Image (cartoon, rainbow, N blue to C red; front, side, top):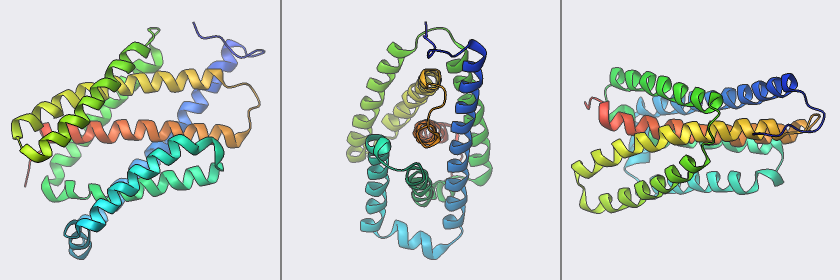
Length: 235
């Protein structure tokens, strides 16, 4: 059972959790909206499409830059300013929009829209479960993390063998993994909110919400891509 910080009542703790989670979701939504807007803009510009997807150095440079931002934010967020953390998260969201613009080139827009709503409903249900369940999801989270590592390894191998069957299997397993991670990460954020002492510096709270938003953003994007590979209609 979660122990509340000294001097915090159950009602105060619930308000604290609600405010924290609401802020996390607001920033996650802002990141997703920025990613979608950038992706749509790039997909509508032939010159940008050619620049990004015909220049391998630029494309892989963007991928490496995105990975670098994720690792930097995760490892150094406690040592940087809240405004810097916010700016880096939004920068990552914009860069992700550049590389994810291929979605609108491969799949029909109606298909992308329908899969997005399916993903949002699935994500919302899993997140609600993570918030409301009394079951400790730590062991499940560890298992899903191991599954994620397996997916990464299998995806790298499949880059060389180019098996459509393996790609589909990876996608189905990926849906299960990111459904589990969404519930686990949401519960972890709830526990983080409950453990925060009253009167904590606003900058520290903001950095916590940005890190939470990044975590859930990654869960959502990856779940969306896995579902799109399974349900999406190609042009």
